Amino acid sequence: MLAADLPMTTLKAFNQCVLALARLAREEGGSHFIADGLRAFRQVVPFASAWWGEMSAAADRVPMQSWMHGRIDLPAAFASEWRQVAGQDSFAHDTLARPGRVIRDSEFTDPVEAVNDFARRYDLYHLMSITFELPESGLSFFVCVYRGHQEQAFTACEEGLFDAYCAHLLQSWRFQVQDMIRLDTGNGATDFGVARPDGSLLYVGARLCAAIEREVPGWDGSLLPPEVIAQLTKAPCVMRLGRCTLTLSPNAEHVILSLESQAPGVMLAPRERTAAMLFAAGHSYKEIARMLSLSPATVRTYLRNCYVQLGVKSKVELGTALRSAAPLAEKIA
Image (cartoon, rainbow, N blue to C red):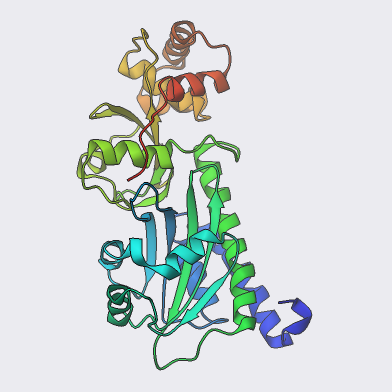
């Protein structure tokens, strides 16, 4: 849908909505701006409810799974209930199979009646969704909006507005995540996560998902396991989770989680490892000293020892050695 095809009032409202999104991303940060940004968009393209997050595709007879999600006017149990029919949901399969394209549908016409029952339960009569590939996480980002049986179907004009707005939404979210974990785009963020103080996830990478799920059977994403949540207030710190080592680093109102693999034969003290992970994440000597209640000189000593033991010569090599010494082969289930 070209801008020239839109009524001037709609175009102005959309532009104001995009400006509001930028302001929300700047003022509210990652914890809230997606929900509030979609509520702002609701004034341009009305919808009854919405759902968004990160999802893995189906593989090896395992259904697709939502690992991080948010919602508007849907109950907390929505994601877990959807998971029961995820493998049979043809609309979800269609949107994941065509990344970057808006998919629309109406009526309860899925070939599997259990999927229709789920849709009826929440009056998901008209659907509009888009999925974006996230190479840096190994997952996909999705946004889906719904209207009920008594409402009109989404139009082609609304599809164009939704397409353009979700691109802005994704860009703002990715920039915030990249700033927090201090990594450029690429394939280096699969072992990171960003959590709120209550343990709900703002971002999670595929390898971190796989590692947590392996160590905590039954974990289905979005909210960190209780044993990890209990450690969030202690950040910066390093914790064991079964065979995994997680480094927790504070970042404003969020905590950054990094999956760490200890290099064979390397024995770093917990404080050395924490200092090294914080340094690799972009914190300065002074910042690390303040967070760990150490002197800058002690931090320098810790880092010098880490460089020697790991055999690295730069901050980038340090981060790689700490995180990637033993790649995980497990797949997301």
